[in-house]
Length: 52
Image (cartoon, rainbow, N blue to C red; front, side):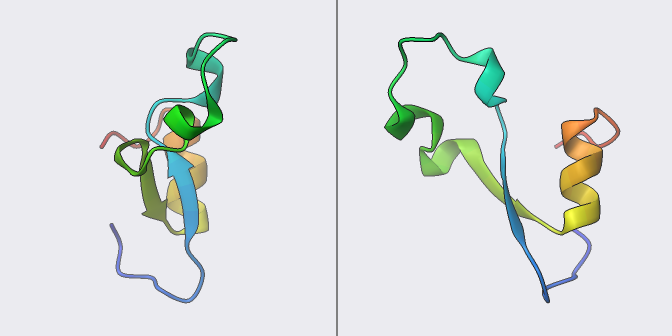
């Protein structure tokens, strides 16, 4: 997203809290639901300040 590569965090595109309680962790952590972001962009994404 920004080119910063020294520390990448894995963010869930669909938030864990948006899944049903009976969903498998393998579905939550499916690679199609994950994106690598720098710490700042991860926070911004989780707080609705960044749209992907």
